[in-house]
Length: 332
Image (tube, rainbow, N blue to C red; front, side):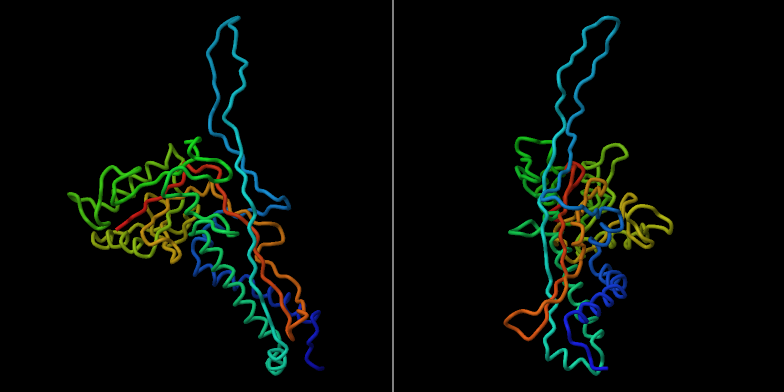
């Protein structure tokens, strides 16, 4: 039987390849993009069906209550304290292009091998783009990132809500070297000691306390490899390191380094001088139904001897509680 070259047959091979290799590709890619992996692991990823905007309802106040007795007149004034943030879906596409010459040259080894290589390349690029966007600030048509949700500066607008006139809609922040924000002092180096305490650990504790309220505490810390290494160095110097044990719930996996019970992970896309204190209870990676790293059928362009398809992602990173997200920055 002659090697098939029709678009329909390429689509069949494309579908077969994606079905059989998607999990393995995803597993391998997750090792390289830990933030995306942990968001998926925590249930932060949610699929939305339709809609131009994403609405996240917010409760920023509890209204009023009053004690009464007998026939006391009670207030019937309406209570404020509920509003909503609105986010736009963002879309990303990675092309998968196979020329007729590649088709001819791949007949001996089989078209599925060529599709497998192209699928791996496209999926890797798609994951790479999303993970990088999570650690960047929104620009142009890109999605919102942690630099937007956990902003270094005040007065930002997110989800259509200005923090300037709504102080409750602001993340916690601390400048390590300037000693501003949630920092209680100025520090010079993560590994410098004040008495028997490392200043990096002191700063982490201050940010932890700032974003915590009762049992509502950070569930994931993300740092660059530089300061992940500094954190490890603190405990290597004392002969003690805190790890997540087998069976630990939430975002941790066996062997994770932890801070106050929350896993601390390193991501190469994280800004070098930053460390995020995230409460994933209030973070969502919204994914448009049918756009979860999905494929499109192969089409033949009118001006090329080739076939083209796309791996498509549609989604947005959103929050419904910025006060529970923190940023420790300008780390040295």
